[in-house]
Length: 242
Image (cartoon, rainbow, N blue to C red; front, side, top):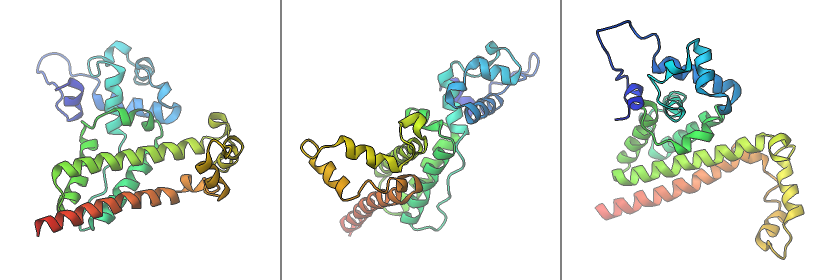
């Protein structure tokens, strides 16, 4: 097991000899998250984290062997606890799970740069997976199907959060003053000869509500399509069992 993963689970190497360590992975991770919240992921460097903790950069390497390991620990520690299934119907729980996943990514948008590249290994990330598997198991799906559904829903949360965040970015990042400009720009670029389907959608005003991508309406529509597919799978499984 990688040392940083062991530490994420509280399996800190202990020794009865020598002075008590002044640092811990938790302290280092909290300092790094504070920097990322204030300055974005670009501000997180081993040197900046060390300065925040008033230690030398070399002192960090006894707890995280690289910036990549630090990002792994940060991604897990920055996630809130998942919603609990309780007695919720599986569809209500998957809706709450996916919305909560998307919302905490938008609360800390620097996670969008690293979370899709980091397999879940920490206690927080695996608790999100665990609760979803519990809900899907109650609905009659196999563990393998549950894992595939978790991958699909988390990827949907990440992609829609990324889109919403980029549309909120404004002219400095996208060249657009706001979400409403997106349809205007597309209208100027997409001529009917080369983009007949897109031009028809633009003419019908399909992109006029780009603000809804930020405000959540289109997110709910797409999530409903995914849940309809899961429901069809659950229905098919029930018929097979009968």
